Image (tube, rainbow, N blue to C red; front, side):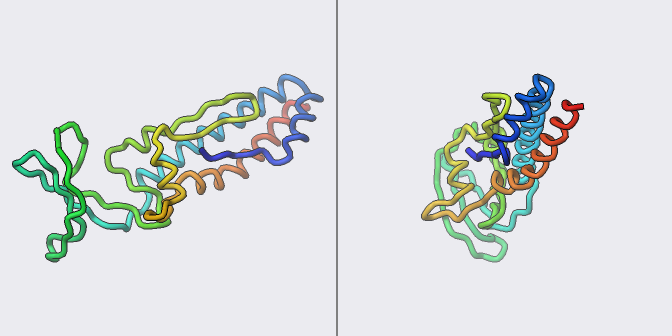
Length: 175
């Protein structure tokens, strides 16, 4: 999970207490709007961002196994990278262009983008996450995989907007 924090949270709490329920509701709306914006941005980065990694070719075999090759069969350069039982339930195209290190993950089946969620546990906080454990491996990398961030850039882009939304909500409620 990625956390988006309100700068000067103590000051925001003091203003909410001073102004009242209208300020509290305005800040809650700002937090929710920002969380929804982050979710939308993460999904867009996964689904539409530039992808310049390896191309994978899936070749279904008569033996019920799917063989996955990396490289270009047109150039005569391929390497077998995986073999798995293909039961027909997978939503797989015959080719997949992966993301390179530093790019958001490239969507293949749509599972990662579909796993994104948020909950608002209080008026001043929201949790944005993925139901898939491997999302963290993609975001931060592992010993074998370089990071493919989508969450961190989305949160960084949303942080100034959250700050402005909160300031606007408090100003509006104070009038």
